[in-house]
Structure formats: structure tokens, C-alpha cells
Image (cartoon, rainbow, N blue to C red):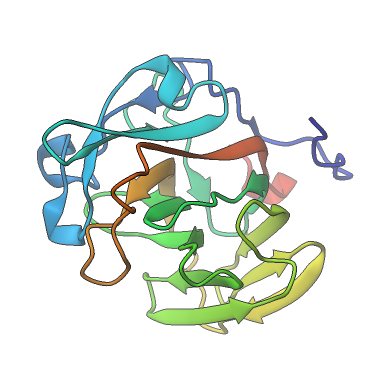
Length: 228
């Protein structure tokens, strides 16, 4: 599968989802007690550490007999490398969106109960819409685009600016929040596929037992002045 073109400077992170030193599977402190469930956030998730749920770059969800869904989540939090994005960093990712109603894919940041910036969230019941959010300073944008559709392959780019977070979709700038994250901001990365519980978006149809979304490439770039 195609990967993102290289930027002029080398990345400080090239995601290797197979690496346990870089990514932890199946738990996150963004979930109560680290997981495995998070019903208060309208999710049917039951996080599992199984490699087939995310370490291939395809994030899966499968229906359980109890009505919950085994779901894949990877995070840099708690890994040996303990990678965190910082103010000024640029993240680029290529994703293939899921098709099934109820799927809830996302790439986002998290640290110490907050510091969340959503590279994207997507719900196939709103087929042409990406949700782009800076929760650090309360900025949000619904981006509608005909290139956004169930099953679509998208190139995403986010600059975590101290004064403005800026998002690009397929090479075009689509939103600058003019609020930013502040100069001292830093946070871990999370990539996951959740399943909606029905409060804000529909649950999966009864005949759907599996869903997935793909992240063929993810990289983070840092200006030399920001490097350790």
C-alpha cells in the first residue's frame, strides 16, 4: 500500500505499530482505570491487546456475545520509548475510513486526564464529515468534503501550533483554530477504533459483526529548535 511522501526533514516518529517499545496495545488511561471499557463516553468498546486488532495497521472491532465489541487501541503512553508530540510538531497520517455505521475511528492525543487534540474523528452515518477538535482550548470544526466517504483513503496533516492548531486534508488546509495548545503542551498519541453505543451516533446494525479502519502510515516531524 502507498505511503506518505517524505518531508524535507526526517521524522522524529515513524509509526511501527508492531513495536511494543513504541506502542502499548489494549489499554489507555484515557479510559477509566486504563480500560477495558468506557461506557460513559458512549462507547461499546472492550479493549483487547491482541496483535490482530491493531498492530498490523488495520484497527479492528468485533462483536462480543455480551453486546460489547472487542476493539483495537494503540498508544505511546506507557511504552518504553514514551513518545509524546509537542507544541510545534507536525503529524501526517494516511487513513482508510471504515464503512460500517457505528464505527468510530480516531487519531488523538492524551496526557494526565486531558491535553486532547483530535487529528480526526469519523462516523459513517455522517459520510462526508470529519470532526477536527482542539479540546485543550475548546476549538472545533466539522469539515465536509466530497473526498470524505466510507472506505475513502485520506491524507491528514495537523500542525500542533502553540498559537493555532491547523488541519489539512488531502494537501489542502481546511481549519486553523487560532487558539493553539500553548508553548509547553505535550501529549501521547492514541490510534483506535471505537464503536458507538447509540447516544450520539447509531449503534452497528444487528447483522454487522466486524468492522475495521486502516492506518498505512503515520509520522511526526519536529523543528530542530524543538528537539531534545
